[in-house]
Image 1 (tube, one colour):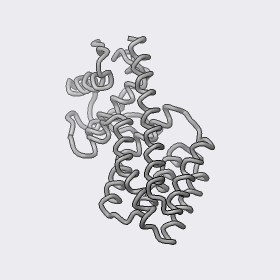
Image 2 (spheres, helix red, strand yellow):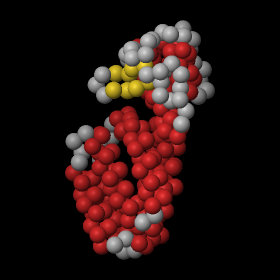
Image 3 (tube, helix red, strand yellow):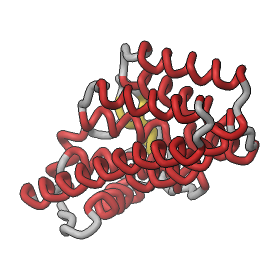
Image 4 (cartoon, one colour):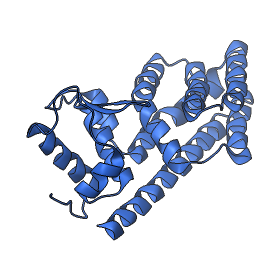
Length: 236
């Protein structure tokens, strides 16, 4: 069994897995072995296998079904906008969110109506309450940030946010599952500060707070990727 090199572990793992698929090791519709089986076969850690599977799911080759496993959908990848997002690492996804949301927060501070502000506050309250699962946390957080983008009254930014949020949802869930971090008072305070800046029509602060929040998430994701790469190298 071939083992990946240290460079671009998840990309190489995805290529090795795709080669096995193209060789007919599994039939369309068949369930693939679990991460604990594939990881030693590919010579990488489980998290790298998970990322490789996510890449191939983004290409329409695999499908992850919650509670059931990973299944083969097709033998060849289909590359499109959705797959490019799903193949991106979480840091790249957060950087794209940063570009959308920092500007949207500034516009929301300048343009919001009373009704917009009420919608933002309701979404903030739901964000604090909807924590029964990681998926619920992601959905509530997305709804909160969308309320801010909508208050900016720029249809293009809203469309970009909706398209991007829908296609990056699984990646955000995977990031939280991997980190295993519960919501913190500091995280709540950051979001409250963003709402406060929007309420005061302080466009500069709203933008800077949104940017700082997403940069912190991005930096945390980069550190996780670095630690994961070191762990894979040590196990290789």
